[in-house]
Length: 110
Length: 116
Picture 1 (cartoon, chains in turn green, blue):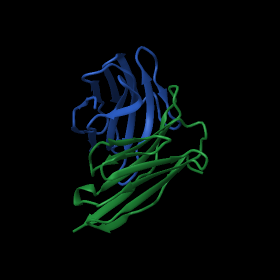
Picture 2: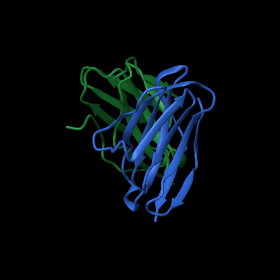
Picture 3: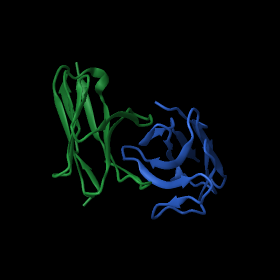
Picture 4: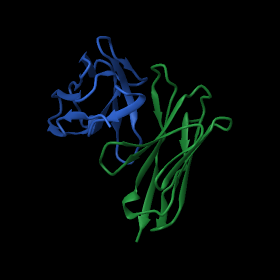
């Protein structure tokens, strides 16, 4: 089993749609969780951290379920500019390495 | 967020030559820097983790004698690809951790290496 697994994608959605990405992690000792966004041929950029209480940033909502070892990202009112690969990232803290999921590709169409 | 620069952004070299890539944290001190490689349509693969002043920790399958990492200061880490071959052609990305976000990583813009 992979340490971090994501929906395979790609997701093809129309503008204005709501889309949800899921991610599971295998190590229950994981402490920090993030969603990164990567555009084609560019470096990943932090989209948002994921907290146990859930957090929202504009159209983006992230949820963490420690019991199920599950992270989600919800994008509402999709824009063309949301088209990118979304990476689920897990860190065990204390200097341990960060594990990246394989990414989920999103295409938002006009 | 914090800024990480990488140089060069693109390099084309002949097989057998060595290439050095620099990663700098511009506005914070990076206690830890990471080097990743990304092949087309694949995820980031961690190559090594380096802490300032100590030897890098390499991931399984990454040759430490081929990919030399030096983290001489809190703002600079270098990756040298020695005796590069065409199969080393890839997108190399560094990231740095430190500053205000303990576990957050800030990525450099990446270096696209093409070995002919």
